[in-house]
Image (cartoon, rainbow, N blue to C red; front, side):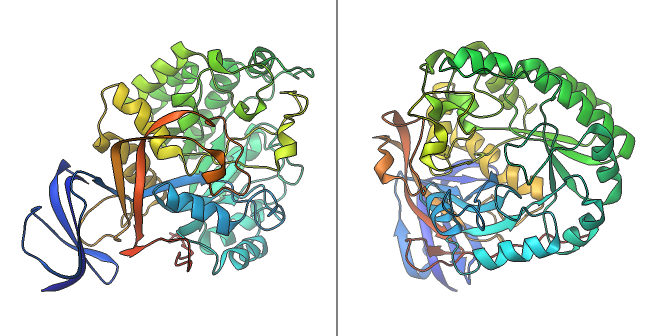
Length: 438
């Protein structure tokens, strides 16, 4: 049999672990897996040698912001950055675009903005806000992968938070995955204007996450619904999560590269590029978060790519209270996590599980996130031993503001393939994905 493409690597990361292998591709799908030296007939046969071959990453937490705030980020720039970072599928959050994705009409406006501009495959979350319970079933039927809700102020007025009662009613309205920004507004304190990072962290204490997780768990238990806790930063919530899972609550949880790589101790006062919500916490918390990831208490790692206009970061004043809370990192997530993971004794198979298979499973994309026969040939050549210095000017994000500027990271994405075609940044080939409604 002749194949369109064969990729060979001595470090292919397959579902059963890392080993030498050849991956054969036909019509955009993985057609066969063979030994590294197996004779295979192909139009293109490329030997990566010791450069690892990973499944394309799946990032289920990306704020593209188009339409409405395209000056912050757009589909062309966000998906180009994603591909450069080894991400071949992303799911776009329902804010901070205008309109937010809380109606079918808004979803169609989002799809119209994305069509023909995406370098990777893109799906969409819907949103839950006061007043749109009647839209949830139609949004689910229209193909959103689930619904996002905030328990605390989202930072934009068009996407207000929900209280515990409204969250529970939403969970009972539609059979779908609900992903929740879990910080308790009663525990979040107003932060006075200050360049001190310690003041900002104190305004969003660990108790805010623990209390909000308890609210989410209680609602999910009563509604017998499936829920997912977004961007866990504090280990204070882990006991609540473990107890709920043991009790049969259908619950998953993610964390983000910045919580695994950055610590409060290293954030200089006035360095608002480090601001995100929930905040980056101390080193002891980070060590315990890594332990939770290693033992399966945390299910996956996604970027929470949340860019804005540079002036909204308030670098001129260094005021953490006024600065936008978000870190743009979709291009850097893989090397950021790998740099830390290898130091802690983890392998590439672990990273692929956390950043590819785990997020794909979360949103129900069995053909993504793993190198397996029949799946999409979304693949990444990753030079796991090469190092580089983060130069903001080389990032494809619309505004290259990053807390990683100047850092030395390990792991370089050498090439990315989407359904067997190399992503070069020229012709966008990404598809707009729809979730199957029950």
